[in-house]
Every structure is written in C-alpha cells, then in structure tokens.
Amino acid sequence: MRYTLLMLGLVGLGVITTSTTGCSLRPAIDDLDPMPAATELSPDPVVLSGHPDPDPEATPKSDADLWDRVRAGFSLDLDVDNDRITAQRNWYARHQGYLDRVATRAERYLHHIVEEAEARNIPMEMALLPIVESAFDPFAYSHGRASGPWQFIPSTGRHFGLDQDWWSDGRRDIIDSTDAALTYLQQLSNRFGGDWLLALASYNAGGGNVNRAITRNRNAGRPTDYWNLRLPAETMAYVPKLLALAQIVRDPEAYGVTLQAIPDTPYFEAVDIGGQMDLAQAAEMAEVSLEEIYMLNPAYNRWATSPNGPHRLLVPADRAEAFRERVAGLPPEQRMRWERYTIARGDSLISIANRHQTTPEMLREVNRLRGNTIVAGNTLLIPRPARDPDSYTLSAEARLDARQNRAVSGRQQITHRVTNGDTLWGLSRHYKVGVRELAAWNQMAPGDTLRVGQELAIWSSEAAPAANSNGNRPDMVRRINYAVRRGDSLHAIANRFNVSVNQISSWNNIDRNRFLQPGQQLTLYVDIRDAP
Image 1: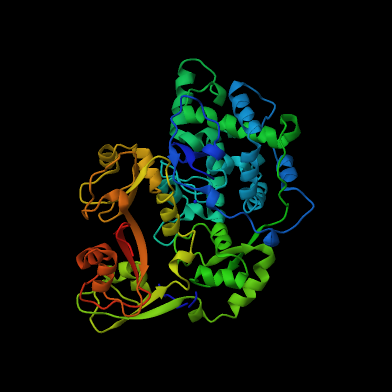
Image 2: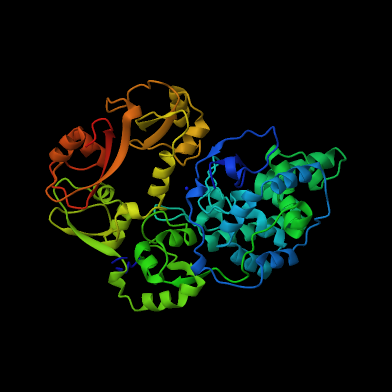
C-alpha cells in the first residue's frame, strides 16, 4: 500500500466484573457503582480523575437539553420494579456526585450515540449503556480485557471490525465502537425475538449463556423471560442497573436527583485529514488542547494518528470548519515530523524501531521496504513526535506511566523487569499481592501475556522486598525517561545515574558502540538514592 509522506505532524480507581462479550466497569471509591454483595470487587487500572473536562469555550451551546431527547426515545417497560432494580436505583440516587461526573464525561459523546440510536430506531435506553459499562470513560480497561466506552473484548471487537494495533485501538474509537455496539445489540435483539432485556443480558454474559439459561428453564417448565433466568451474578445486576438509570433519567425529581444539562447539539465533527498527522499539530490547528484531541480521539495510542487510517480526526464542532481549511492548506509532508537516520553496521529494523519508539511495520511502509533487510550506509525516514514525548499526556505510554506511579497508601513501589518464565500469577505470589491488583497497576488484564523486558510496577506492603534483576533495592528503583543532550555518551549517562553502559544498552536495545543522537529517548532504571 502506498504510504503518503505527511511533518508536525487516567473516574477514580475502578471496580469491574468480566463477561463473555465485554465487561461492566464500575468506578470505585468516588465513582463506585452498585453491585451484588456476592460479587468480587477488584481494582481497575483506569484513573478517570485525570481526564480533562470538556472545554466550555469549545462546547456548542443550546437551550435544548439532550436528556429530554433521551427520555422521548425510551421504549422499554420502565414501570417494572423489583428489589434488584430498587437496590441499583437507590445507590444512584444516593450518589449525586457520581451522576454529575458521568454527565460531564458524557457531554462529549452522548449526542452522537443518541443520533445513532434514533437512526436505527433502537430503544433510547441503550444510549445509557456506556454508563453501566464504562461510566463514559473512553480509556476504561477491565480485568476481562474489555476496552473503551462500550467495553469490547479483543475478539468481539475484531469481529465487528474494530482493529487493534500498536498505533490505535478501534474499541476506543467513539464512532466505530458506537456503530459496532448498536449493531451487536440489534443482532442480539433479533436473535431473541425482539426481547431487549435478553439482548442486554447477552451483551454482558454472551448469547450462549443466555440460551442455555432459557433452555434450562424451558426444560423445567419455568418462564423464560429475563427476570426468571438464572444467570451470572453480574448479569443479574446488569439489566436492573440500566433500567434503574433509565427510571432516574425519566423522572429525576422523583428520586431527589438532578441531571446536569447537556446541550442537544453535536459536540464534535469528523474532519478528513487525508493521512497520518501528529496530534500536537492537530491540536494547534484546531485551537484546542492536546488533551481535548485525545479525549475526542481516544483510539490513538501514540503521538499521531494511525498510518493505516481511518484518516479522520474528531474536533469540537465549532472548530471543525477552520480546522478543515487549515488541514487542506497544509502540505502533506508537513503533517508529520521526519528524521533521516543513517543505518549503521549491526543495526536491525527492530532495534531501530525500538530506539525511535515506532514499529518495524511502520518503517517498512514509510521506506517502502519489502522485508527486514537493511543495508549499512543507507538512510531511513523515521517519524518523530512534534513535541517532547511527555507532552502527549494521554498516550498509551503516558497513561500507563501515570497508573503505575499512582501511589497506593501504605505500600512501597517496586519496579520489576520481566524475565523468561515470569507470569502475573507467579509474580503476585512472589510479591504477596493480588493478581488482579498487579494487573490493574500496570493497565493489564490477568490473562494478558508478559513480554521479556517489560517493566511492571508493584506496590508492596513488604518492608524489604527482594532485590530485582539490576541488584538494587527495588523499592528505591524508578523508571525515568531521559532525553539525550548534545555531547552525551553512554558512558557519561551511566556515570551520571550510577548504572552501567551494558544496562543502558540492554534496557534500550541499542548498540553500545553507536553514537547517541540529541533528543533520543532512553529508558533508565535508577536507584533514586543515587540519582543526580
């Protein structure tokens, strides 16, 4: 595929439960959502409180309230009441602050979801489902490996065309994931003869589990509606949770609740950018913060849009026309920043990619290489971020770093570098922590695979944890990102941080005999007692 060169281009700690198709994330502590007492609670790796609120100056104004439009589209039986619904509704009614935070986050996305639900003639109660699934956090990630506002697990996401690669995760794309979720819900409703409660239960537990529950009841001569099925504990609360929310939205005053108004106007507009673009460049051209660009385009993992598309960016609606004109007038070669790199003896495509925080696939495509063979003396074009990497505060690396370094009261942080044979379960036993909390601290799911060399943050209550692989006391070791300065050498940096040249070379997969380049990013594991 031809690649067109383009220059400048963490909801408090969460509580989640897994399901077959996705995962209900229920924010904990200040964002806790009700669950049956028998359900095990475990921390989620997302820190919603770090997400910026919508920019008031960038938010379209309207006298109409979107909640009125939502109410008008309700079509489920919201007069039904039972202990399961009452328990959920009472919790929401007691937590006005939670509802306010959810409404603030929903302001960016809910109008689009409502429009899509209306276009499909889907019960508007479905537009509230991201509250149950993710509290409208687009970066929500569960211990069941579900991601995004609609909480798709990887396989279901891929089934609905939500690509997941180094550059982006379509499960977090607001447009694509909403389309996939509503399509899936329609399919489930059709599967169960138009029964939306069974469709919701299947979205959470999987259609196979619901089918088996129906068969059990039919064989026992029992009713086969949702309320009479025996399903997983989470699913038993899942549908009541959505109905409770809908009841509150229908008549908030009846439950002593106020709903923060959301303008009934589009918050964002999609703009065709024609190819890959640096997100910092996009933020400047749209005259919004870089954080706002990430919140509207949370699928992007890095500092730029994906080279493989979709080549669009969502920007606040009132900035879209000016942004579109500026992009149209920007030469393609100026939408990304590029660096020419001279291949040295001993280089490999993967070592160069690791050193420059990109991928071999990207280098192959940009430089039109057919394989991994490169020749010393030739040059490669390498994409570089327009700003300092630390500026991209909602990139995957930045969110992981923030989560790993979010202090846990009464515990000390340990940095563990993964070696052959390590597993999350084994490490949890070694450090005497829960496997779910270990995964959560590192924005992982318990079933995720570890990579040799991967660094894990472990918050231990042990007074003196065992030394890690570099021989220092791990509770004093911190990972730092170091930008090479003019005149730096591996030897000088090693002396400055009291580490060895071999360690720096190993941590960054670089040739110790190669010259460093100013601005090159190095990862160091430093004993803070010896840091300069």
